[in-house]
Structures are given as C-alpha cells and as structure tokens.
Amino acid sequence: MSRPASASGSVSNGKPSVPRAPKGTDDVLPPASERWRTLLRAFEDLAGRFGYGLVMTPLFELTELFARGVGEETEVVEKQMYTFEDKAGRSLTLRPEATASVVRAYLAAGLQGVFKGYYTGPMFRYEQPQSGRRRQFHQVGVEYLAETSPDADVEVIELGHRLLSDVGITDARVRLNSIGDAADRAGYRDTLAAFLTERLDALSEDARRRVATNPLRVLDSKADSGVVAGAPAPLDHLGPAADAHFEAVRRGLERRGIPFEITPTLVRGLDYYNRTVFEYVSASWDAAQDALGGGGRYDPLAGILGGPEVPGVGLAMGVDRIVAAMPELPAAGLDVFVAVADPGRRPEALGLLASLRQTGISADADLGGRSLKAQFRLAGRRGARVVAVVGEEWAQGEVTVKDMAGGDEQRVRIEEVPGWATHR
Ligand code: AMP
Image (cartoon, rainbow, N blue to C red; front, top):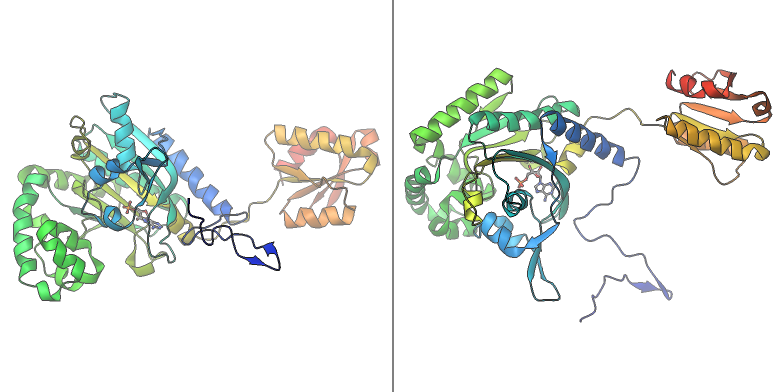
C-alpha cells in the first residue's frame, strides 16, 4: 500500500505535528455545538410529533445504489462521490444523501404499506469547499413512503418549515415547482432540448454536453441561469394528473399558512424526483442563493432500484447551514455547580452532585481539588446559575447556595438544593 503523503502530518524538530482535519470537514465543539443540539432536538421532537420513526442506515453503501438511485447523469454521481474499493474489491461509496438508502432499507426489509421515517447524520460529497458547502455535512430528513396523496407532500413541506421556525428562522419561504411525471417530461424534454440547442454557444461546457443526455439538468445549472430564464418550463407541460396534484399541494400549503412562491426553474439536483419539488430559503442564509433544505416526490425511485412501485415524498435539511443561520441562543449553562469548601467533605459533595444529576438537574463540580476561589471561577465559566458550597454546615444537614446572577447567598437544607436550583 502506498503511504499517504501528508495524512500523518509533517515532522518538525523531530516531533510530528498534529494532523489537520481533512479539507472541507469541520470539528464541532462546545459551546458552539449547543446550537447543533438545539436543532437536532427540535427536529427529533418535531419528527416524533408528526409520526415519523428513527431510521438508521449505513454511512457507506454499494456504489451501484447511488449510481442507480441518484442518477448517473447527476453532478453528485459524476463528480462528487467518495468511492473506494474495500479489501474484497467491492465498490463502496460514502453516502452523498440518504433517500436512496432509506428506500433500499424499506425494500430490503420487505415492508409494505405506509412508512414514515426520519434520519439525522453526516453525508459526503466531494465539493469545492466554502461556507455552507462542505465535504462532510449533516442533514436531517424525513421520508414518507407508500403514500400518493398530495397531503403527504404538504405535510413534509410543513415539517421543514416548522423546523426552521422552531429554531428561530421565522422568515423562511418555500420555493415550489412541479416537474410532472415521466410521461409529461418526455415531451417537455424534447421542447427544452430544441430550445437549448438553438443557444448552444451561450451555454457552459457541462450544459452543452447535457443538452443531448439530460437537458433537464441544465435548468438548475447556476452557470447557465441567463439562458435558463427564458427556457420553456416543466410547469407548462404537466399532464392532467400531475396538474391536479400540484393544485392540491398549493391549496394545502395555503390552508396551512405556509408561504411559498412558484419557481419554474427549480428542478433539484437528483434525478429520481417527479411532480412536487421544493426548497427553503431565508434572508438569514443568503450565501449564493443556496437553500437551507429541500426535497420532493420520488415515486419512480423504488422501481429504479429494482423494487415494486413505492411512491414517496421526503425532505433533507442542511444542518450546517441552518445552524449558521439560527439566531443567537441564550447561553446554555449548568443549573448547579457543586463547590467544596472543606476538602474533608469531598465525598459528600460528590454524593450531592450525583443526586442532583439523578433528579434531572444539570450539575458539575471540580474534580481536581482546586481552591474555592478557582472553583467559583470555573462555575462562572460554565455558566452555572447556582453554586452549592459544601462545607462544615454539612454536619447540620445544610449547604450554602449562592445565586450567581443576583449574588445573594443563604444556607438551605441539603434536600432543598434541587428546588432552589430549579426556581432560580
Ligand atoms: P440535497 O440533498 O442536495 O437536496 O441537499 C439538501 C440540503 O442539504 C441543501 O439544501 C443544503 O442545505 C444541504 N447541503 C447539500 N449539500 C451540502 C454541502 N456540500 N454542504 C453543506 N450543506 C449541504
């Protein structure tokens, strides 16, 4: 095996330097990770309330799953996959998205009928890294399988919109489009290809190549937005069934009070979508007009994967971007910091710490035998609302509690500490 040139870090003064994280990846540490926790909790809570159950699938899959499920002609499959051979020569790929995996899992388990699943986790795409465009990034998402009703589309769109407002992004709007069914697209494809062929000189190299293979992909090419603005839209080529579906989705969103704008050029990067496609935008995340999340209906996907017809609709929200767009949170601090004034009472202090934690209170202490002054400094840094000082008053069944914000200090019975801490 060839030795990775820089993976082990460079050597200076005979001491190896700490390896860097790979390009386009991030470490998320406290306190910044509090924002992630807030978002993930909000999502899990919401998904549960909407009736979705947790789905966990492998972070890597057979490459074939994405080649078929996402589409050979897509940017993701053509350029962005982390594909490698394992020791047995299988071609594996780190998942660039989760929908194909969830549908594969549903089919593999032999499930039938309505299925509502949610997932959270990292995805991998070989991108040109920038803010909000990472090589490892996180998504939270839901998939609503075996349901053709337009109300399922509305529910999924509502969930994403609700998630954004629950974490404080209250101005999110939905961009909405319908790309019709495969049969509608066949006719549209030819019309679009003819339009683009007349303008080949104005198109980017990628777009020129796609005119022949997959002209729809040109619609979401940023480099070609000038030409695309005047192109015929899929929306004008919907068959009666797709048209009625789209109408029902629009009415459902209006009834739910979810703001949306019809965006005729929205097609989304992955090939398996039909009918409804959507994404969320907000003024709080404006980087190059990128979306905070998106999704759509993908009725053909299960069939493309070799399974029976299982219609579906889902969404994926970009956690990295949402976290960056979220408003400031109130600092999450500890409820109680247990300080030790009398080193002889340390075992009792640790007992108090354990019992506070057991009653659901967030509590911590210094385990390193630092001075009382240093313990108070630590409590301040950890954002503790209350410090409970364990000293000689323990003999009378009491501790001294100090309210860190107001500064008042009093002796209370040990068993009253939890109440005192949570009523601050
Ligand atoms: P997609 O699976 O491409 O529809 O992406 C859904 C959402 O995931 C997007 O709207 C973004 O918020 C997020 N996303 C996609 N790719 C990346 C990336 N490379 N880095 C960060 N977020 C991403």
